[in-house]
Image 1 (cartoon, rainbow, N blue to C red):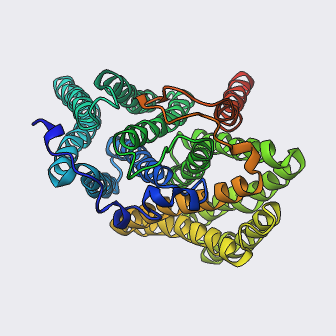
Image 2 (tube, rainbow, N blue to C red):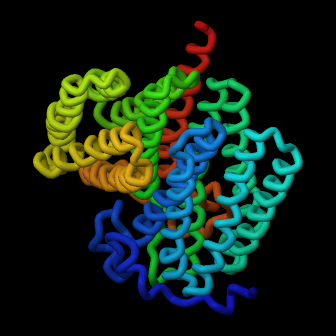
Length: 444
């Protein structure tokens, strides 16, 4: 199929993507809410959720977890949600073709996990061939659909890298090398956000009348905040279910959460200083992360009073205290009542996802999971928007013109300001996590 023959202008994107507007209004929109940045955030949400669900479902298939079937269904539902977004850009035929290719990928990962569990090497090879077919077909689709704005070779290479992260994380998990498995998981989670940047960049270059440049300093910052927030939610669910089941990798899933917390702290320190970031960590660890652990322990012991106490701390005490902290730090740019309500919604989704899993209502658990995952992008939008509004000079786009995407790793040209903020909110954060990981490993 020659997809350049079915390309259509974006007509329905305003209805499909929250906050979407025409680029004629770009100058009136906050820099974290432009048409291009909203498109990028939508792709970031769907693609990263795919990554989290892929790893989760493969682990559950291998472990023989009763929730495995619901996890696979959630992965398929995620793929189905991509269709209207792609169709809004490339027409119904293009959207259907995208999902058909993507379904092949999901089937391949599920088959690979099942084959490893069964010790069926021939089935493993068949699954790997199926996954490589997805890489080749999706790379060709993206290259053709974007009319070369996202080159096929670059797209194929990055898709292969994504698949390698998924497979490596799972294989290391199977081998029992949990430190390396969760290190790979964190790296793969970061890598998939490059896809949202590149695909949205290619689309905006292809349809400049519909989409503004998504890869601005403000767009990069929102994407980074979104990533850290979404990663927290995904890791919380992994850690809590691992703790409840007494899994051997629980301590390492918990360790991954610590790396995520350090990223939050470093991001806040880069804006508000060390004192404020340390206040955040104390609040985050004592009223949130540790209380999640209390909830798991109470649920495993069927101690309902303790379950209720932990739930109240998360959804009331912590939500109020964190909402108050963010409201004060952003100088009322995050309204107090709305911010508290947003944190409460997040905490409720965390608790409900876990409790539904414990009760054996796995379909409901994954429905709540998906809704809770989306909430993190609302929180990321609010927090990044407030910070950019508070410190606009740090997010000025000095690039003279939009540069087309060259692959799933970003744009061909970036301003000095963009490079600065990528360094502050991505590379330094990853370095901090790597240092902590090495220190932890050396102490064992």
